[in-house]
Length: 284
Image (cartoon, rainbow, N blue to C red; front, side):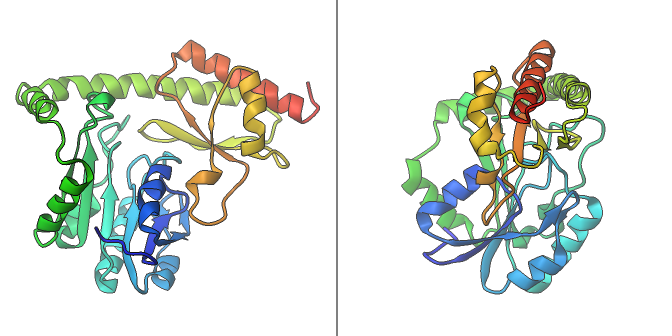
């Protein structure tokens, strides 16, 4: 609804591949804003904001990197976006999946009239429901309804009523902590396996504080896209990082997910990835 052909759209570097794919049919001009572990860089945002329709961000346990925007960076971003008249599309499907402490308050809470907030039940209830929600300024609401109707007529009423009923009974309040505990244990298993298996291999990775993913980097000279088939031949798969970049990208980067496999499978998979890397480096 906010994009025309050639519209300038800003995203984090890297950003969620599904968002890039969703924007693509409208043929926008997408630009990545320099980002670090704390979030988007204010100087680069300011330099690129002119004429932009919006900035798309995932502040909590971002897909693909797993990073979380700091409180200081959220405050700075909210203030700068307000100064620039730059709308923010805040995507938060992972915010309830924190491990030790909740993330800072949403950007939308700081400037409701300048943000569109996206949430989902897929990560905390059931992916197959395909049910999400949006909080938007009242001025956008009628057009958002039109766009939704044009896209798929309507989300299934049956699915919506099921989720509503679940929410009335307090199930999510009991269920989500069990997900957090499970995912934290699986993250810890992956971090432990990486530390053990990747010794001496010049592989780096981060330590997400929630969510479903961590971000890793292969040794110099190994392209994650080209290397994928060799990893699969060893019995392990990952998502190459390059498609998550709006411009350019790090060919050595990749995304690892720790939420579906068991801890034993995580250890086996990381060991298989390490074996494939050693073989590629000629260091069996």
